Image (cartoon, rainbow, N blue to C red; front, side, top):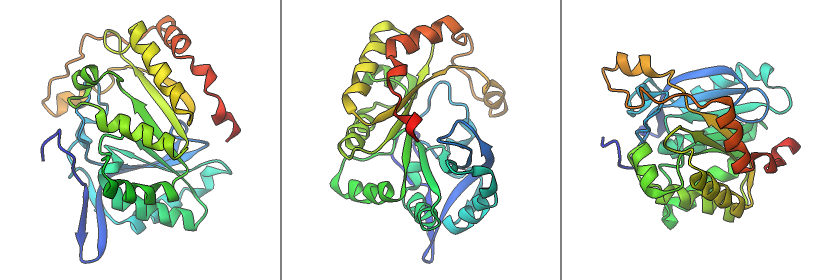
Length: 265
């Protein structure tokens, strides 16, 4: 499978859906409202320079699992979730497993469980047929967590190996649907920290009207041991982690504090 081509991580055996899942995190605090249990699905069309899960980029990482099997495993941790928590599906890129996450969402919806999708939107397709299927996902989901890796197409290509026309189309489609978003801006010194880059990102996000939260995610190099284990070169080896002052500056330019609707959740 090409690293830059849209793909699916779902297979059918008979009438049953399967996806490759690497792991389940039982107790997460930064993956949506409240305490959440996170299902990680493998496969991603992006090759981000700073990817912290490079072992999950290919679609066959982990074991095959059905939506029902995944849901049953996740529900073991329901006691942790409280009133605001629930299930988050991450990756990899979960939209590569669109049919799977729709079925999982239906199970969550039936049980009244909060259901959040953590995505780069890299597998979004602007065709009418895809959007009809995508609308099924929106019906069973409560919130999307979206990374903004770079607004400029050329910079996005440099950072991820892929342009972002379809990703920006997803942002606009979710805005059209008035579907709630929490956005994470990945701050990488020398790449995504320029003043104009930050200003244009802020203006784009403000224009949408459905961004409830904007959070700056500082770049880190904690994944270097994973690249070494995979015998892959880590191209940002010499890139520093943003300083506290640089993070404050980015938040000021992005006007992160103006996105406060998430506090109502």
